[in-house]
Amino acid sequence: MAAVTTAVRIERDGPVTTVLLSRPERRNAVDGPTAAALADAFRAFDSDPGAAVAVLHGEGGVFCAGADLHAAGGPEGNRVAPDGDGPMGPTRLRLSKPVIAAIAGPAVAGGLELALWCDLRVAEEGSVLGVFCRRWGVPLVDGGTVRLPRLIGASRAMDLILTGRPVDAAEALAIGLVNRVVPAGESRAAAEALAHELARFPQRCLREDRLSALEQEGLDEATAMAGELEHGVRSLAEAAAGIERFRAGAGRHGSFGEVG
Image 1 (cartoon, rainbow, N blue to C red):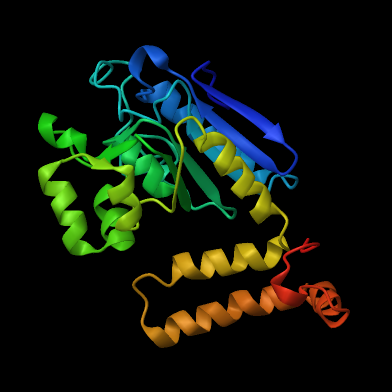
Image 2: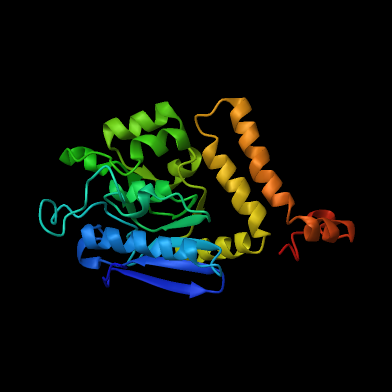
C-alpha cells in the first residue's frame, strides 16, 4: 500500500517525473512516513512504462536537512532495519531508470545521502552539502559511507565524513560531488531540462549502459566486461532503428537532433 502524506508530491511532464519533498516546517527533514512515501514514489516511477527520468527536488529553497530528529524514537521515527527500505526511504533501491537531484540550499546528513543515491546532481549557487549529522553523533546509514568514496574518492570522502564540514557548490563541482551548478532558483528547471534531454535518447540502450556502470563496482575486469556485454547484447536487439538513422545521415556535425 502506498504511503499517504502531503510531504511528498509527484508531478509529471511527459516522460519526466518530478518527486517533490515538501516539509517546510522541518526544512524538508524526512521522518518515517515521509521516507515511506519517497520510496513508494520512486517505485511507482520505476514501474511506469511511460516514465523515463525522474527528478528529486526539495521545495522552499532546501533540498533536505536529513532525518527528522524530532521524530527519532517515536512512532513516526525513521525505520532502521537490515531489510526493506532505508531510513530515508529509497536509498536501498536500485532503479532501472535514472534519477537527477535538483539541489537548492542544504543537502546535508541524510539529505546528502539522498543526493548521493541519485545518478546526477544539479546544484544551485549557494547550496551546501555535508555530513552535518557528525555534530549530533548520528551515523550515515543510507549509503553515505559507501557512495561518497565511490563518487569522489576515499581521501576526499574521509575528509567530509570525519569533519562534517560544509561544502559549497563550487567545491562540490570541483571534486565531482555535483555534476552541474546553476544560478539560484534554477535547480529544478535545469534538472528537468536535463531529464528531458536524457528521455530523448533510445531508452533501452541508456538504461542497460547505466546498469552496467552501476553493477561493475567491485568486480574484476573480466567479470565486469562480461556483464557489460550481456547488457550490450540486450541493447543491440533494439538498435536497428538507430543504426538506420545514422546510415541515413542523422547526427552529422555532432548534431543530437532527432535522437529518439
